[in-house]
Structure formats: C-alpha cells, structure tokens
Image (cartoon, rainbow, N blue to C red; front, side, top):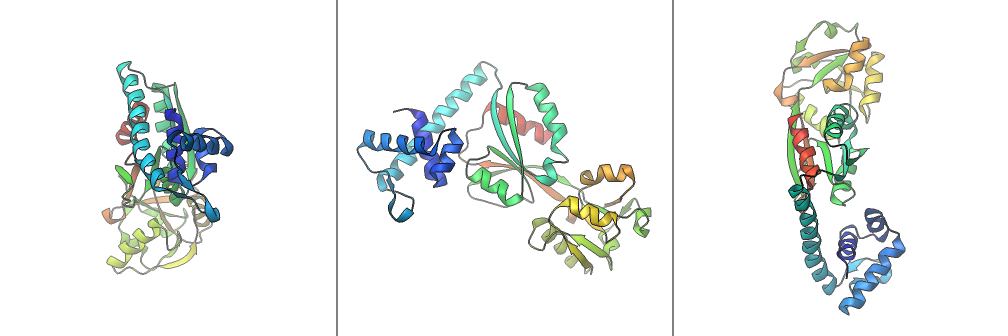
Length: 292
C-alpha cells in the first residue's frame, strides 16, 4: 500500500467526487477508482457505498479516512521538515484570491516572493469570494485570500490588514475637490454599489444605517471594474479600496477622496484548512503577505 493511495482516498472522502479527487492528484477518474479497489482488496472491506448514485463512506471507510488523513499529513510534515533541515524552500503553492485583492494588491507581493524563492511554483487563480472558500475547503487551493473573512470551523483565518476605503467620483463632481471626508459626505448622494448580499455592501449599509445616512442606489454591479466605469460616466459615486483606482486617479478619469471612518475599513485575510500541513514555502508566503 502506498501513502499516495491513502491521500487519493482522503481527497475522495472530502470532495465526494472521483473526478475532483483525480484532478487534485493529477490522475484520471479511472485511476482513482482503481486505487480505491486496491485499498478495498488490501483491507478486505467495502470502503464506499455507491448505490443510487450516492457517495457515502462505509464504517470501515470512515475509519480508514480518519487514520489515513493522519498518515498522509504526517508524511507531508516529514517531507517539509526535511526541506527545512536542508534549508530548502521549494514546491508548489496553489493560491486562490478574490479579484479585488488579486488583481490590484497581489502582483508586487508575488514578484517579491518569486524573486526570493525562484524554485517555488506559485499558481494563482482569481476567484469570486464564495469560490475561494470552496477551493480551500475542497483542497483545490492551499491558501486563499479573502475580504471580510467569515468564520468557518474548518478554516484557519490569518488577518493580514485593514484597508481604509475611498469615495470615488467623476473629476467634475463637487466632492472631487476634497482630499478627505467622513461618511456624511455620502448623504443624499446617488450611489453605485455592489449587490445587497455581498459582504462589502453589507458593511457599507451597516455603517450608513448606524449614522442615519440616506443614499440612493442607482446601480448595483457585481465587480469593481464595472463600478468604476459607471462612476467615470458620472452615474453616481462609489466606495472602493484606493488601490483599485490608482490607475484611473493618475489618468484623472476618476477622483478619490479618502474616507476617515474606521467603520468602513475592509479586513483582508488569508485562509487555509485547519488540518492543512503548511510547507516552508507556504509559511514564507504567508509571512510576506503579513509584512506587505
């Protein structure tokens, strides 16, 4: 029996999908099935119930998953410990990041990391917030970068920073003359914002409600790029992180006014599974994210 087979089985148990387990291990769905059959022959027990197209571990399968996960993690820890002894930082990091951080804030950090550790294979995917949680929870990503982190018993949350927000508007808008402002500046304004269910929208609405500020939402858009385009045609004002509009402010197609209210700060965090064994490369990357 190989430890790799145990890892495949554990990934299958966690994802409930032969296809996903194969993708996580770089093998075909058929190969996953063959490895499960080999384990069943080895332990002389049925590990998975496959009736009615439903996936469920048998009692023996649950036991194998519990002990197999410990063995796979211990083996991974051994590999990483040997790397540390040799002072080697290498391997692969699969990173999933929300668009609003990945596109605007991560690139300088990635360049700095790869310059220090050129042998690390850093794979970055830009995802919607819920997809980042799915990737990390389903082992499709080692680390995730999220905003407004939500508590999850399966995940470890590493706070990275809090971003002060900015009010953006057309350069000819009356508010464009200000350098800083309070949330009261939004009173009575036409607002372009995210949809009501998004964490950013909830945070803004809560801050407005607490201060008794009324605004008129004229557009609800699901990404910062379209929000910026709407503000550029003077459809309304918006509240976004300053880093996302640096290019437009330089080009003078938008004006940005720093909002002083601490209640509007956007928390950014890294997430990973609590049972995840972090390689030296992953720990170095997390350290760099905190520093940056």
